[in-house]
Length: 154
Image (cartoon, rainbow, N blue to C red; front, top):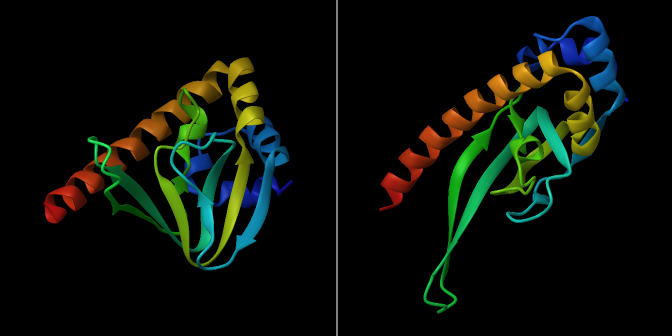
């Protein structure tokens, strides 16, 4: 558990009232990971939503040759900066990460338990609506960044 006051520092949580902040704080842990750590890979069950407090995280997408020739190419499709949320697949069915996340500098993160967060959303429609609005904004930003990266690689 982290303090609700810690969450209040980040714009992503600004819409929450005191009760909502307390409930989310109860399912949030602070973790520290070393540079070079693979936090998750594409296709894994999205068991957590993350907020980067300090450090740097890269999002990668692996493209595999459809003809089965086992040719793979890794694309950097996003950089996560302090204050950014990532692992948003934790709130979007089928709840599987669509990219990989690599810790590129020793980082401090807030880790929100996805199953518990989804349960909170099921009982609080206002919380659900605001989370979805924020997730849509993040998704659009990441999509635009990915388009630029893929065009640059082509």
